[in-house]
Amino acid sequence: EPEVTQTPSHQVTQMGQEVILRCVPISNHLYFYWYRQILGQKVEFLVSFYNNEISEKSEIFDDQFSVERPDGSNFTLKIRSTKLEDSAMYFCASSTAGYTFGSGTRLTVV
Amino acid sequence: AQTVTQSQPEMSVQEAETVTLSCTYDTSESNYYLFWYKQPPSRQMILVIRQEAYKQQNATENRFSVNFQKAAKSFSLKISDSQLGDTAMYFCAFMNRAGNMLTFGGGTRLMVKP
Image 1 (cartoon, one colour):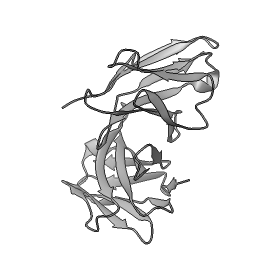
Image 2: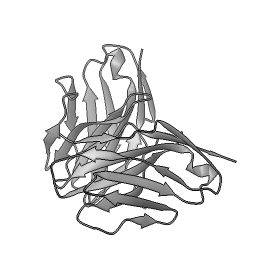
Image 3: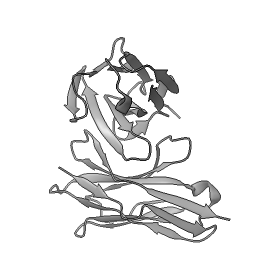
Image 4: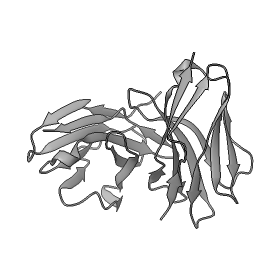
């Protein structure tokens, strides 16, 4: 069964550093998403991406965040200057008729 | 904006018994989708079951079924013959017809006891 692949599974970074989280969506899917889950809390929408541009974003997705689909297969989330409160599980998802989530990247900011 | 509420933070059930998890939502739309996701300790998000709002028939997937009450904006999940592997967080989620984003409830932690 096709999968959404996320790398790395766990990333530790120093506060103020830039991080890039990587995702390979399912190849024939057209919509791509990033979600975030702070430990013990609900899953929150960050951004959706379609036709090489952002189609919708939440209030969480401020100027420190950006997304890119650099080569037609990867879909990345960049956090420019990480803060302690960015520590969370980040999920990538893709969809055509239904959603498939990746297994997540656990980001720890120290 | 849509909201999704799961009123049971934690539940437990004996193995082989049946348990029902509650979910209510608020929307002004008439066409939408509802989902239940399972999140085991690995924290992966696994789709359990999906319901289209325009379908009156409740969705069923093996031991998992839903009770969808559109007028009441209620979408409960019933797990029959509970198994130890069902122990997980369960999230109810809403998606509008445009299908651009999922709105999740706060989750219910289910413990299946042997």
